Image (cartoon, rainbow, N blue to C red; front, side, top):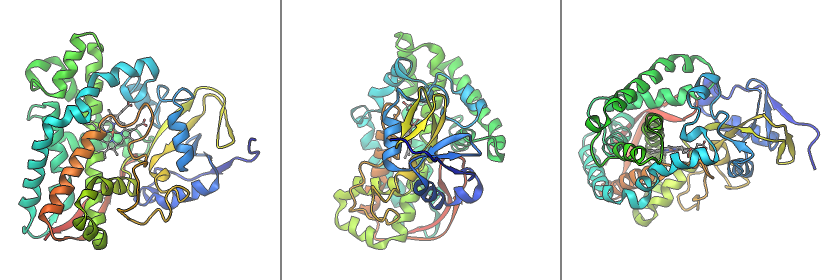
Length: 393
Ligand code: HEM
């Protein structure tokens, strides 16, 4: 049965006030109906756990290839890339790095990841106050991604700014989009520079090198190397940094949960899932309906845009009772912070390896995490912290 009246909203999902704390707005949308027509975006939005799951799992109906972003400039630039392609076009792009990005493929890095995590935590312990974002959360993923991809030293210090710009230009054409567009361009200029002479500019044995091997073997075209490199470079840093910052903030503000983890160190990966559920870095992407269909009984015409609110779904009380409560005993392994279905995050094993190595090092070496002032960093499609006063004891 279809619903006669479709809920609508004139909310600006990308306004500063919403991005500063999106959850009240998300709750409003979720309560309004299974999908809500968003006047400002000319699109439907779904914020409920089941609806988001259904849309993401049905990638033949809700396609990515017609635009995952909220403006035409970006959607044109992303045409045919891993995140914005479907079916047979998407498969080889995903396969090109699947082995290296799998748990098995990442195994050689694990020891190094643990050593680096120990060094970082011990280096900050007893140092007094530091910025948990700049001095901790950003340091580790930058180093890991730089090493994994095999980047030269040039450029690595720009990766945070480029990642931030990438996630801003996915949003609508607001002030954040305009300010980020030139920075996004710089990132592509850098990747173009790597592409001119990859065998000399990338380290042999890294993921970047493997990409060019895949192109030489005909698995993907050479022209697909730069956008794939971009996907792995910029998609993987801000999101991971955000999750590590939230991890610090949540444990610093919930000493009871920290004590529980200290007493049960085997709960590290479960605890990281709860962090990702409660503070999902990726807020939203878009899909387009390829045929007439429905979501939760609401008819959706072919060609309609559908906003998928990952972070909202992960705080749906119908799936997670008392969803705003941080509880590492909760079994949150079915959260959708990494998406789900064919386009689920290609780098999630790396993100998990990094965060779990850091959290394990914290559990081993720290008695307490103390936090003070914090500031949000506003971005159109990723939620994160810009500053977090921290002390490791
Ligand atoms: C906590 C950290 C991360 C979060 C929360 C996250 C989140 C996501 C989400 C929600 C998607 C799905 C997009 C969609 O449905 O259209 C995605 C896709 C993707 N992610 Fe991540 N990500 C993280 C880390 C990483 C890392 C470390 C890398 C690589 C180094 C990476 C690379 C990618 C790529 C290449 C895709 C596109 C996959 C495809 O379309 O087949 N991500 N990510």
